[in-house]
Image 1: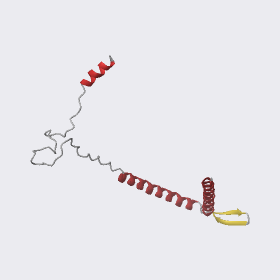
Image 2 (image 1 turned 60 degrees about the horizontal axis):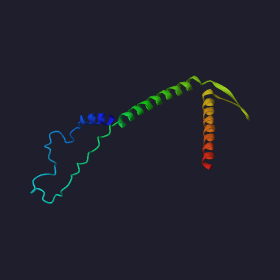
Image 3 (image 1 turned 45 degrees about the vertical axis):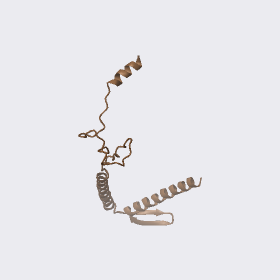
Image 4 (image 1 turned 90 degrees about the vertical axis):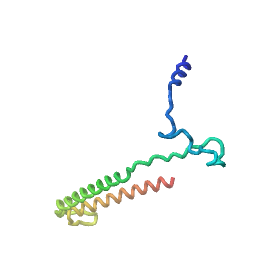
Length: 133
């Protein structure tokens, strides 16, 4: 019963005509015998189909990325300038070997750079240990 239903359904299915609109139904290689006497008999392969061009998305994405990067750079620059302007007072910094008086912004920047170096060196040590295993 199932095969009968499948056959009746398939009998009603039509497939689209693979020939381009406006074609005469004659293959492009067929013609009078005098035009191509040396043509081989047999099936003729269809011409290769060129793929559709890929959409151009790289240009717009790069422009948005550059605009975002420029806006972020301006924001960070403004924040850093305000940070320097509002932290100009001098502070006493107690070191292991003595005391130093310096602007607060300089002490904060030095502390941030030293912290970054410690994190970078720790990361490099972990990567070297993984590489040696």
